[in-house]
Amino acid sequence: MQYGRSLEKLTASIACSAINPTSHIASSTLPFLGPRFPRCNPQDKEALLQIKKDLNYPTSLSSWNSHTDCCDQTRPWKGVMCQDINQCNRVNYLSLSDIDLHPHPLEMPSAIGNLPFLNFLYINESPTSLAHSQQPSQISPSFDTSPLETPCCLALYLISWLPNLQGLSLDGNWLSGSIPDSFGSLNRLNSLTLSRNQLSGEIPQSLGKLNLAIVDLSRNRLNGDASMLFGSEKKPLKINLSRNRLAFDFGKVEVSDKLEALDLSNNGIYGRLPQGLTSLKFLRELNVSCNSLSGEITKGGKLQSFGVSSYAHNKGLCGSPLPKCKRFVRPTGTN
Image (cartoon, rainbow, N blue to C red):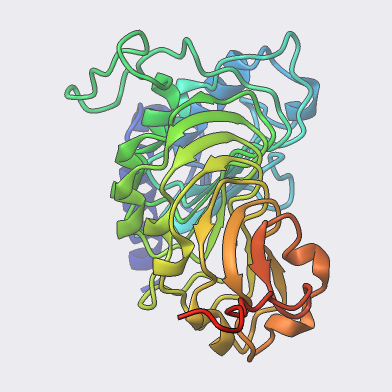
C-alpha cells in the first residue's frame, strides 16, 4: 500500500515535470527512500528565471536561484507563491513590486505570459516601459498584434492571455497607450488597478462584462465614458476613477447597493447625482468634487454625512452639505 502511494507520487511528479523527466528521476528517489521531489513546476521555474534575466538580475530577486525550489515555503522565492493543481504545484501569485530596476524603465518581461496558472499579478512602483516588448514564444500563434500598429503596447495585450487572473495591479509604472479591449475576456478578474500611469483613450466597453469588486484607474489620461463599470447587478466594493478626463452623464448610472467607496473627482462628469446613492448602506467614502455636476444633492442615506469637500467645485450642484439651492421666484405681476 505504501509502495502504491509512492508510485502514484512518482508518476505525478514526472507528469508535472514534463521537461527532461529522466534527469529528474536520476537526482531523486521514491519519497520513502530519499529526498523530496521538487515542488516547482519546471516550466514555471524556467519562466521565472527568464523574467529575472529580462529585468537585468535585480538584487531584490537574489532568492530566485536555479538551484533552489521556487515553491519551497521554507526558502521562498521573493514575491512567488504556488498552488497545488491536480498534484502539480504551479505558480499562481507573482509580485514584482518595489524592485530595484537598473536601468529603468524596462520592458515588462514577456515570459510572464508563460505562467498559465497565474491568479494574481502585482507590479507596483517598479517603472516598466512596455512600448517595445516582444511576442512571447509560447503564446498562441494567433497572437500577432504589433506594438507599432496598436494604440497600446504589446505586453498589456499579453496579460489577456492569462485566463486565470483574478487580481491585476500595475499601479505606479510608466504604462502608456490605451487599455486593451481584450481585458474584457479575463472572466475571472475581480480586481483591476492601473492607477498612476499614463494610460489614455477611452475605457473599453468590454470591461462592462466583468464583475469587478475593485476598480482603480485613477491618475491617468483616460477620457469619455465610464458608465459600463457601474450597474445595479454588479457588486463593486470600490471604484476610483479620479484625476482623468472622463465625461458621462452620472445621473443615468445605476449603482450597486454593495458599493463602499467611490471617487470620481477631477473629471468632466456631468448630470445629477443618481438617486440610487441614497440607498447605499455601506458607503463610507465619496468624492465627486471638481466635475460639472448639477442639481440638488438628494436628501437621504449617507449623502449628508460627507463634508463639503466631497462635492466642491461643481458649479451647478447645491443642497446640504453645500449651500441651499437658489429658488427662482417669478416677479409679481408677470404672467
